Length: 303
Image (cartoon, rainbow, N blue to C red; front, side, top):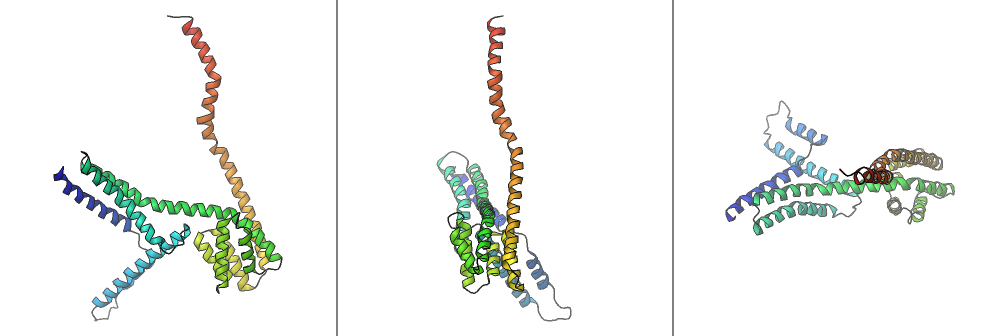
């Protein structure tokens, strides 16, 4: 086995390099393609050397790519509920552990057992590749769960907000009151409304703060709400009437979603009925008859 260990480590290194390349490989955005097009095109009558310009354009392109990847990752973490500025580093650490630990375990198993190192390292590399993808699925699952919770709580918040506005409160004070009233029933929404209230107190308009709220959750309902508030701020229209209309539409939308899920439940219940309930019914109904038939035909009439 000692003769096979260097080959195993070389295979492990090549596997890690290949997985790192696959992880870092991404599709070029429109902005990146435009930068490449501008950097590659030069004026026809220019006789100046292009080496310095090419170096600068390559540096700018790398910087833009790095910032775009960083902003996209940060935006994705925020949508999943990780507001800590160090979340990017923790995600990188988790991905590295998920990638390296299975490969290291494979190498250790090959050293203490008689299993060929090629097999253990291959299995470790495959498991590490799947482990590299697990954090992305976790982020998507958290984002979907947060959106589902918020969709259920937005109509209730709109009702309370409309009542506060009809009572003569300002929009900022109404948002603060709504966040206090819904802290127990809908803590996630209450936290976000508290952030909106804090941003509005720091000088940002309520409509812009709500737009930032919509970006943090990537939710169409909040974008529509922010658009209503921005239009009311821009044109000076009645915010109470706009909120009442929007609250009614949100309640209707929630009722339609509930009806859709109720109709889907009729179809989904067929599978447990077929595989769980019907076999038990057949056993209870046909079981005694099968026992009697067996006693009559086999026991009383032996061959």
